[in-house]
Length: 565
Image: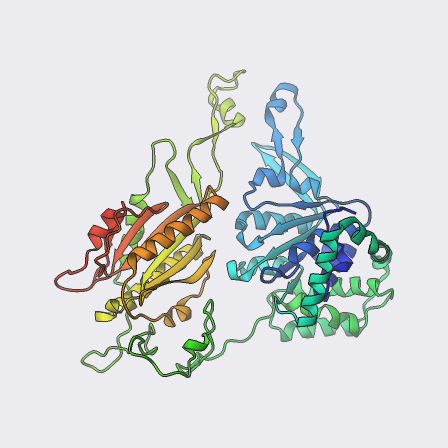
């Protein structure tokens, strides 16, 4: 047992999480575990502790977020193929994780292509590596364990379904539970080895039970009665496909083996139901909620005591009715509410303007794809197949060709939304929200990160924390209100500090800054520096422009885009 690992059985509570891990240890074909929960609820602690109860000696292999495909699957040395006519395979993380645990922290932030690859290998148990027409394969059977904080972004439904079991953790503990958790951690920190030794008998008992259950698993039977019960529950949960049925049966059989029995009963079915359906069950569509619905939208914060919904609206607040909230719907001569949207093709102009503002050089000009920047600069790796073809089979090749650099560069879109009272004229604020919606949807499609700040009423607020852009934000936008003055300089200074902190953690992070404002500010920002490219989107809608959007954009060394009326 590693001295660095908090003992698996010493973690207080988290019964479902422990059960999901044990069932996968008994039968890795269940398909792994996805654990979703806020910070500080023992996700990583239990993840690292599972390796200590697996049969044999197995280290937990961690996949870093910045991993490349070659780091994951391994590489083939084709230079040795050409020289010695044999394949030299350099193992990757999938080979090292064979018969063990592959752990991905913040799996929702991992590139979708890597998640797809991980799940394919997890399901098949075989890792295929192919390069320039030469292939290699090896066995890779492991427990895939992914953890995520839902506040930082979501996984696509197709990827969610491919995780065998799912656990939803809550960060809320009772007072007694909190005291016990702190007491256990205090004991571990004081003398880790003594603490581990005190749980050694219990750890060995769990490991022995897992070994016995694995041996008994092929002999477990399930009657047609309970197979029908599984099918009925899956049908009632409105799940897509049959993966839930298959995983449920495997998990129930593993639970039966864990319990020391040979036939699946109803208790086994019920014990794993939540783990199987957490991330798969769907509810039938309901009619749209009325305007009086007080349920908080996604990513909204509950109102504080000072801003309770029951309190009357102040002078600086605006009515939260209408298509975009924070203003009453204006009416045309027909008396019908105005449904404000962006003018046709206006967002195409925004994207084109931001694209042209990116600084680049001849050798490193890249294209944005899937939330990453793929540079056309040479990676330094020889493309032997292409080199041989271009040299007509001569050896050594007359001219070497090199592969493109595929190093991923994470991208974050920083949206700064002017929420001052001056934006409430002529539907400017509604148009600003439409811009935010378009930017958020674009970031979602590209799997890019998003953070949204609001500045108005003489204060700066982080309206949405950094996360992979959520797919649905319209309801959330409806709740944003506007009032008061325009603290533009304070907003930009806070963003500069925020970006500097991000750069310390992720030096490769690329920032795009979208400043959405009517320019009604007299503050000078000439000495403010932001990281990345900046685009000011001017939402002022007036015959005579009184804002100074062009000047602000120039002071920030950014680009200027006037949103058409």
